[in-house]
Length: 501
Image (cartoon, rainbow, N blue to C red; front, side, top):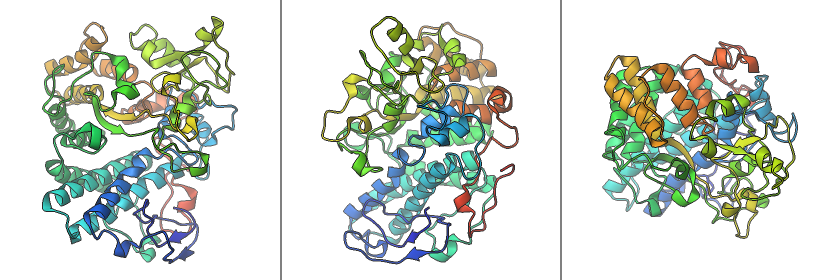
């Protein structure tokens, strides 16, 4: 989505850039070292490469936001933007204080990432449905299901973040790009539902973690569909989908999901694809990427971003000081057993004389623990260590789906006994006493259980609490529930800016 539309297909892109709108200047080239889309997808190996390309935007960690979850944390009341100064990572700063506008903010990265994913999924689907020589029927069906899952995932991000977005389910020609208009949110949600309901039957029930970890399964599809229904306030549908994922509270579900006994083990790189993980975004230190390969490295740069600046001491490595935790979150979780697995209390280490660190912008002394840069995870390969942390990001996990189902049951007037069992299974895992199945208790549990994992802002907006909770940060009701359409996307197109921007 840059100012130039390049009509060729690189091996690791395998999808056309989309809605590039600075001008209609584009190139039609056939350079060496690339392959034209028209001549690609001619065998099973190339089909698989196209599938990998469609998954790839899930883990994008580059651009002006660097890390998607960190930006979303900064928009919530759980963390500040932080960094070295009030202008450091300005795309985060303006979301943190709600001064973002169409030209300045994280919106272009979210738009590009998700529409790139949509474009790649559409290209892959078109090729698969036309038939690929040598690709057997079962594999074709699975790839189609995965592509539909991915398209649904990317569109779900887009409709939540922007509300009013173009909807297309086939590759676009150069001419069509500039004539695309926005669909209604209802149309987008209908397509998401259609993609997921068609995909789920052809997805595998489980995958071998060692070779296919991170690929979509039936459980992943149902979890995402249940979450989609929750956003649409289709409470009974949400509860039914999520019940299939969750099974009996506290037990192992039909898809092998089970709450871990040790809350702290959920996020360890030594425990990837554990029984609580449903949708996991994969990162690795094996690629040994460096600054020269930006933005193509495969490590989790968010880990580096969350560490305290200039840190010298035990356990942790120095980071860039982003997302210092708010005292509101720290005080809310301090009496909770999950505190030590959620909050890195760097001030206490420094005050004990065991470490020193630089107090950056908006410093509180408290940092993200779940994805903290730790010495034991530091890459020793050939690339830049700070760019190659192996920590995966778990986007959907079982405690999340337990709490979503509990919420849906309460909202629908469904089985409150089951809602309580789901809520209290999450609490019992960390030794907390049971509580009544109420919306307030579910909301409180979601904040503490899922703290710093990128859910809080979405939850506040989805449940209508953002205008109250985030008002002290500058949040304006009727405007800041969504992001502005990136300014660059409005030039020479038929897209219309979101209200208030």
